[in-house]
Image 1 (cartoon, rainbow, N blue to C red):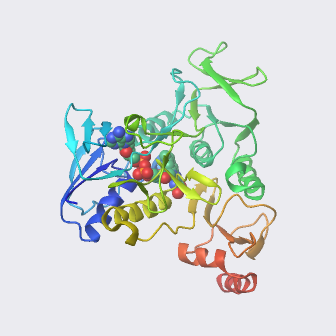
Image 2: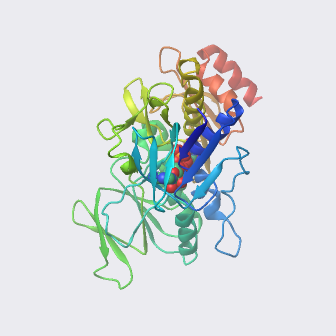
Image 3: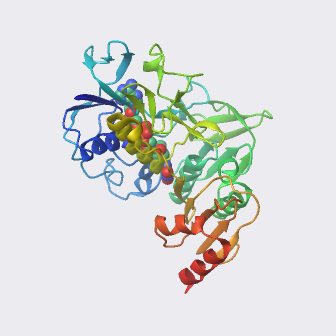
Length: 394
Ligand SMILES: Cc1cc2nc3c(=O)[nH]c(=O)nc-3n(C[C@H](O)[C@H](O)[C@H](O)COP(=O)(O)OP(=O)(O)OC[C@H]3O[C@@H](n4cnc5c(N)ncnc54)[C@H](O)[C@@H]3O)c2cc1C
């Protein structure tokens, strides 16, 4: 293999390129990225970037150190089609790009409530963050639709900036992903920060019938929430349209094996890829998972079965409403945790759920703890975990 092309210039694409070089690949390497930017930290966009105090519209918290893979990088160019038999990509600039190895890392994009609602804003890239940051200066009333991690981080940032915020959510915030115990913790913090939780489903967003320049979010019971800014965070859609006729999709998903492989010489990694797990295939749109997948997929491209399979225990973090939460291990968790440090309704806190079979889940809240330690804590037996908690406390 001496001509590898990576589609997608996010963290998965750039990690795959770096990993190829680290494992001795010296052939041609090209990265095709639809965005005009060098890879950046998306997680920073809904956290520190929205709180940046610089006077201009430019943000900096998301910047990452330059990669050293020495790939040829085409920015602002998208892959528009793939002919697998010819090993050829067609590109949005009218050109083509041949390859003998392909890494698919084209990520996802936010789902909108309606494709054509001008008032509805979604949040995924630098431009979205810059736009929202500027809009927040006038302290608009904000309606956030969806209470997953992104929706709640946006609600937190808007509330911290002095906006009145309503979050429209069908269940408790983040309940589906984290479980009810942590959802309760987050809801309480959100309400203490003045956020109004509206338990309903948003059906539509339209010009307000009462206030010129504002908009109404129409709820399932016919009532409305009036806001100056509507941020929708109701999930995502994988960027796979360019693969429509390539024969790589199964039921619309890009299902990879445990090494990220899709076809001979073709791998996928990051948010776009559906990976095999305990309950079938699923996409795991998390930063550290994207990195782990990309490392595995790049090695599989070079070494095939001799490459290690994906062995990654999910890890994620979120900052919202004064809570810095880190989670290692399976989610959602059920029931109440064992407290290693702290106690309910107080921080710092270090908790552990024993999920049975040794696969525990460790959660830290406002606790300085390296990921490796939290991961070890999640895996430990209850007694050892208690000892670790005592050490952290002491
Ligand atoms: C605001 C925000 C906050 C987040 N916070 C957290 C967090 O706190 N913790 C956490 O674990 N995760 C978080 N995430 C998720 C995390 O950022 C993602 O899991 C990660 O960025 C995925 O990387 P990726 O490279 O797979 O995809 P992406 O970052 O989406 O990169 C894919 C790239 O491919 C480009 N592309 C798409 N189609 C094409 C094409 N046809 N041709 C060429 N290029 C194409 C896209 O434009 C994009 O630049 C957050 C995400 C967002 C949006």
